[in-house]
Length: 236
Image (cartoon, rainbow, N blue to C red; front, side):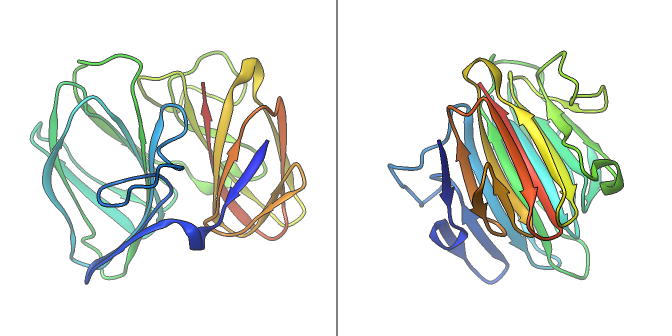
């Protein structure tokens, strides 16, 4: 089954520096029909204005993956980690026993990110943060694992950032007319978001920034209607 969650129907929050759209219940947005998808609990589509961001705050026992769509996000935490993640790149924070961090757009243009929270398969791990570059050219016409706790599949090279869950976040850029196929063996499911462009998933159309739940499909073919960029969460 493939179901489209149109961008216009997502939860929303707006103030003077943040425009957020919520694929699942988050903060003051509570939608009983959309409270996560398996271990995928949060997928936020955030636009952060220049010089603004999230002041230092804490997390525990959560795998937090940030994919930068445009601009850059700067991170600092109480462990002494500091770094800047640019468009097309990824950072992962395993909150574990507890981490306090801040995220800011220190650039002169708006930053646009996907923030993805995955419930870990084990709690109480040592907290960590890491960022990694993933040149978009390497993802042309193929799904590449950006963050993963899975092993042994051809799409997941050693370069994926580790997470504590039998899940993976994969990304691809597709030229108009290109397609990519992904298997979901053993009853696995997926959540797909079109970061840019428009695609069809097994013939079902999805527009830019739509969410797509995929359940009970042993294989999906993602075909680009126009030049597109996609992110896919492969989930137990």
